[in-house]
Length: 332
Image 1: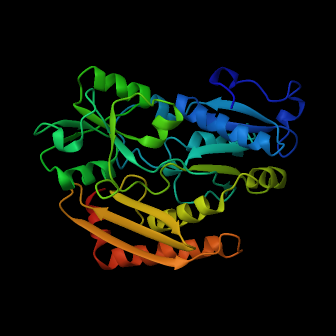
Image 2: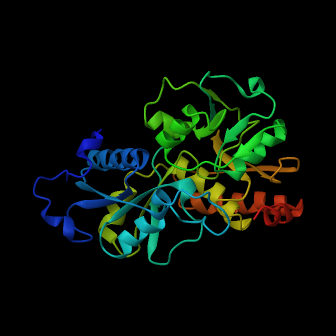
Image 3: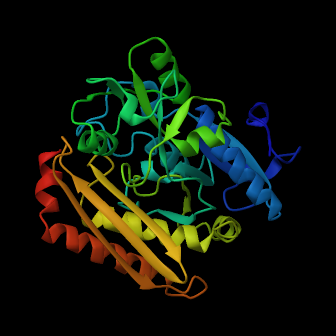
């Protein structure tokens, strides 16, 4: 795979077609953070293996420069809108998003066309000593920008102080090292992609920490009418990942939860059965609604994503019947 210092160079020396949407070089629009650049380069490598030429087009999103805590007024799309606008303005042909950051409401002129193979879905607890959740001192300060993570931590350790934190992975680790927090929670996928294998961390079990819908997955988005880009980008889609994440994101949309609500979901496939488990929590973690369901799925069939969406709606309906909407509204 290319290295980050190749990020601004085209895979084609000429790059002559880079300025013509739908033809020649696929221009990949991405944020400039180290993790986002890794993801874009990874997708470029996958596309190159399928015979497509690519060029990385780095951009700065509002979420990268505004480090205030995310809340109900500054939330959905802070990391994705600038990248999507690049496609609409013809600055790029393909947007690479962390799927958990992508709003469930689809833009009418854009289309999410592919989901490559998924990285681990786990979250992990990062401390300077590498200790586990039970070993944290009473009232330990935990840095996380996620209400989902905070609520699930408080569910098992109500004594913890959940404090907001912003910035990329490196910035958050610097704040931990500076003593602003006793621990921080990070997605294991990002640490794996950045090859931070030596970082002291403990993986949180799914019983404690169910992931965000789409966590560990990438969403590849193109303009709806760009048939050339659609055909080429579709070649790197992984049906199993697509089915699982469609179920998760459909559930999130049906709950009207957005990316801030304390909602967790995970789709898995076992012996041709698509399974979905989900939680909705109160912000203090003391109320936790849970639901799960499954249905058969043919990953090679035309109705695969429709079946996945139906499963998402079914599990969402179960949670709504238990009172999920009330918890979600209370957490806004």
